[in-house]
Length: 149
Image (tube, one colour):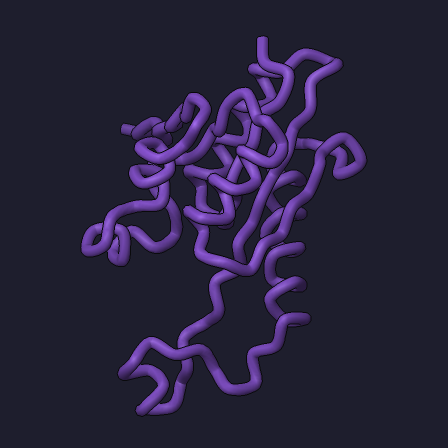
């Protein structure tokens, strides 16, 4: 059993499945941390969309609300009470935020989905789970969502 696990949540089915697996790995006295790094939406104007910019009116408050919604939906899917989970929201690149929190909290292991919402982006620049698994100072358990065939 683990004392502490960190689960990155991005709203994907893979992340929700990783959370469910993490819950099974913990006993009653362990700590479960979930982290979300909100990704701003793409701008809809022609110039902003062409360079991958966020909308000009996207605020830190909007990012926080987005993160809170992703976390709450993930916890609801897993049947978890928010009071039993340590919630972390960070505003820097996902890999950096996950690694920094794992080190700062002395996490026993990171449990994360093998794929997130931005599969196409991951194909070109490398997935978050791949980078975290190579750079983390603790074990990383990558959970694959089973095929339903």
